[in-house]
Length: 128
Image 1 (tube, rainbow, N blue to C red):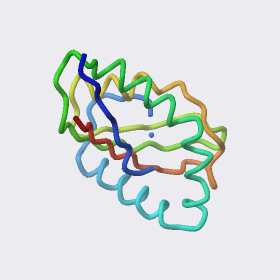
Image 2 (cartoon, rainbow, N blue to C red):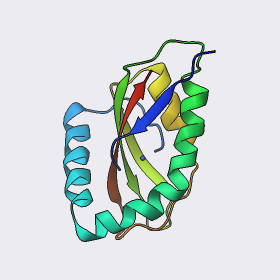
Image 3 (cartoon, rainbow, N blue to C red):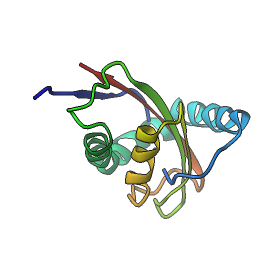
């Protein structure tokens, strides 16, 4: 059995139907701006305390070890509500497997963000 390692590169998700590339880019820009603030850096720990294990389970479910996925990279952006619920989320590139990850974690509740509708970015690369 091949073991797959997942590397989460940066700072989430409810799957929505197709979205415009400029919508993704706009959300990504806001998420990148958030992550370099003091509040964004402070939020990463509490965020990934809950989200990290959920992402790991989603990756194992959506990218089974029996299917080759090494080298696969994708980016997720998500807005987090004041309650910690994951709201609007988008993934690029979109595939059945990446959509599965988004759908699998969409019910996770994380720590309340620094402000409502806080965008975060999650970069994922599957390593052999």
